[in-house]
Image (cartoon, rainbow, N blue to C red; front, top):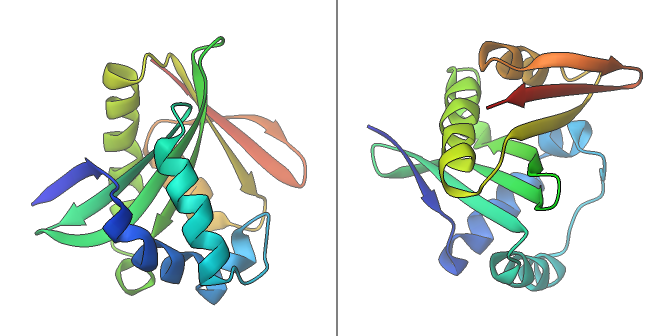
Length: 149
């Protein structure tokens, strides 16, 4: 069973572990290892930030990935960031997580447009966002993809 739920502070360490995975770091815009102490402070603040929403993806009640929305309420748009558990990559979860979380954003966060910024070499993410209905709107070293409600 595939589910999405708001992240809780108890998810902090797991999300930190996924964030520091070498492949995740390679395709992140910040490629440095994040110390847990720093992540814990960031995560606590992120959970309290009304313009940020973090969702946990679960498959059969087991955490499988995380989606973060950084929201611009004036423009009713958001930037999406997705990270799938390294142990569960390559199984189509990325596109499912993107679709489900975007439905959540459209129905619960007063969003009309979702944007993703992806490094050009991150072919797996580009493919997952395309499968989820996103279209490329800009292409340089960074691919910008958008989905409208």
